Image (cartoon, rainbow, N blue to C red; front, top):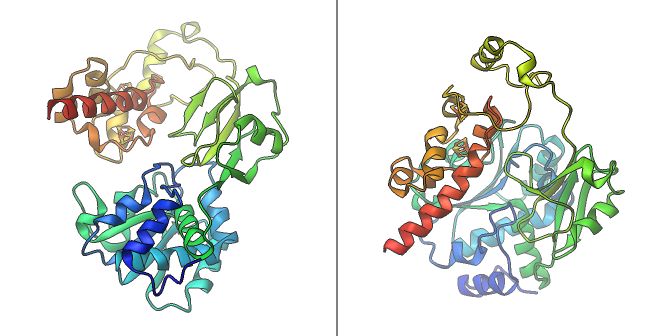
Length: 352
Ligand code: SF4
Ligand code: SF4
């Protein structure tokens, strides 16, 4: 245990590094690296505005570990030598909001901030703009801000105040395909199958469910439950298998095209889930929160065209999955863009 009020910046950063703490919101970026060279930081933000539907681990942590959330923030502020601390959560998180406001009341420099209940409310860029009206080019530190996830702050508090390394985390197990959905505190490295067993097991046979590591928008579909809980895994989603759809050719082609043009793509009676050709409807462009052109980015990614990927700002994609969600052709647009982004990064790195 360490008295953080008396500790130096380097001592705190070393402790965070030794405890193996990474961003627990899904990014998995080493927390100490954010603070090592940080200068001129005036605000630390704890981001509790969980983006995706179904995931509630941070919500639970804010209610049950309020003490560590607030002290984690104070430790991170001391580490960054920041004067102000903000905790950001969604409007619907009433119980967590009340608990945090009560705990923060004893400190003048802490504030709890609510953001709208919409996706992707937890997008870092949006959180910084909504709370401080600041914009940045690449990273929040450019405008004097460091953003950390709520559970990361808890891990920091436990590492500094109790000397506890990061060996466990809270994981949401949710979806209609699991018997007892809930939030579970599990050791890092636990098998997903064990965790699902703890959650009452599968509500259907394994071949009748879809298992997703992460949330429904940004998570990665798994072949089975044979994978481990990592530090960055926020949740496991178990959904019932595909519904039976009537195949499109049973309807006149003209009607189907009209449905697509009028965005009635979620009428599951008529549409199969297989990918259909892009009809250039522009829906993905209209809905992309980062202002990108997902259909064109996908084309560039499939063509492995790093020049076009660069021109279309592939690195600005936050992998929110909105483009795939709204696509009437059921194209996994963000999946291709994600691969294009990796390809672009490797190409750019090799070119240097
Ligand atoms: S995943 Fe799609 S919608 Fe989301 S930021 Fe990337 S391109 Fe835009
Ligand atoms: S990728 Fe999908 S949403 Fe985007 S333009 Fe093509 S059909 Fe429309």
